[in-house]
Image (cartoon, rainbow, N blue to C red; front, side, top):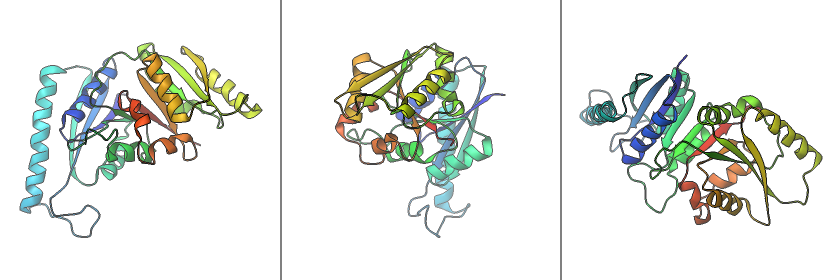
Length: 282
């Protein structure tokens, strides 16, 4: 069965960059790519009871703009990214982006969502746009990968996987991390920011389990001390020039503290490499 990849787009350069990254990442795999544009109509709120009707001038103009954007996008892809293993589908919908993503995941049995970190109106001093953060935090049906606008695809040499070893892992929730590593010969660097001199017994057990889950791929364990979580991860990534960072999205892990509150400048390195969020299936 073909892999099913959902890529939201607002037809910005950042969105096109995320599309191209995804096409290269899965270059050797048979894939169905679903390009999603959730358009809105000026003067109407998605959350209000007042919604435009098909046939109304404003609605039809917004719909036409979405369809025109897709026509241009497909032409660009045909010229530069034609791959017989890949099939393209387009979806235009009047909706909020998050709801449109969740609906499409359910209807199309999507395997992974890949999107840009900022949209057409993204400010240069904002590392992640609201839509990207919402998707990474609230899309729990499948993994989400966010691609910064300045990142061009290169075969990932290593992926940093931070963990505190406090919760046990399950093989299924790490499947996409392992799949990428196998596909591209990527090394997984497991990073622990230590707050205590030694791991507790439960942490050691969880570390052994993770070691077993990752046994089929090249991986190593690393520990940093005397650093905060954000600073430690950033320092590790920067010193090694790592290609990607992956988290398991758990409600009670430090992942939430990294993305739920406003992003601060010490987290700026996350704006330079793709971020893969995996799902807690417990």
